[in-house]
Image (cartoon, rainbow, N blue to C red; front, side, top):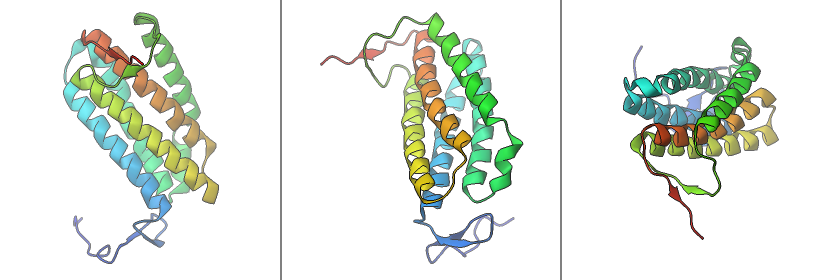
Length: 181
């Protein structure tokens, strides 16, 4: 399979359905943002490496990457693929993971400035890209139908990344900076 096709040289690309659209199309922006999110998550996986105390976090992140491929494919106009995964179940799993990590950490009483250690900082970046992806998905949903399970999954995913960033900083004993007004 060749990497370049030259079919996009005039600013258009093909959706999975075969429909040609401008690369500035909102649908392309949406699945492109999911792809960007998946890339930064890959950076997190590299930094977690083989750290035993973060193994559970890595397993979860790898599963998220796989799910994001389904969501990206769905958003790239492959509608049936979204039924191949249990987004509702995965969203509930996120809530359980958030609760489990939160119980182990000090109570959050103030806003924190994104950062801490390298893993925590990258997870904060993943959180903000997830928020952007959510905004773009919502914008797309105002134009055409978007499965509500996708919106809910992405919304909860940003909460998970926030908690994971705090958890990684906590496990690695990296100081979080409290925002002082």
